[in-house]
Image (cartoon, rainbow, N blue to C red):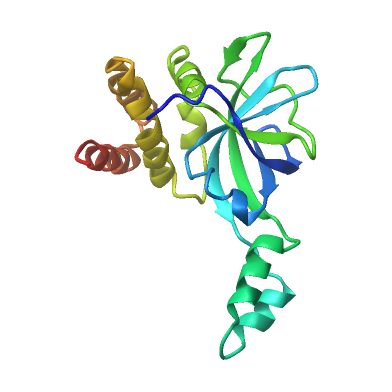
Amino acid sequence: MTETHQSIPIGKLLRAENSQFVAGCRVRELDTPALGALVKVRLEDQSEIYGLITKILINDDSLVRQLVSGVSIPTEYTADNRYNRNLPVEIHVLTVGFAKDGKISHRLPPRPPLSLDELHLCDEAEVRRFTAFGDQAYIRHILRLVDQPVEELLAAHLRQTKPLHEQTGDTGWYAQLCQKLITLLRDDYPRLTTVLDVLTELENE
């Protein structure tokens, strides 16, 4: 995988709170964001809020309902609805930390980003820098999610992040993160077993 060294704008914020936020993007921008990807929003004071994509939601509208009820849909109608529709695709993001004056923290930020702030996909170097910071405490934010496929999100994130560390010879990053997960879930054996199953599957790919 080639280093990009450049974050990619993928949408603008619709709504936000300290622990999570939602951005909107057009369908044509969907080639870039993916489940588990690390993204960021830069605030006016130049601090940055980091998050992981937890869900990508494509809403319907009245036109879609009309089109799907038809026997056949002309190709040009489908293309127009996908690429020129007014309703944005929603990208849901879990906040996992922030950076201020170049210093990373895996705590929640003092305040959330604002509507219309731009959402960027982090480049490879930034993913390595954020995920390798400290004792990887950002992972606890994934585990606090409720009513979401936490194990699948974790697998998607690690599938993207693990190779980036291995490319630079940091083979210990993944082992350290696995140990972090075991520590955090030591009192929840059923959940720990499920997470370990996911990690085993990931290692066998």
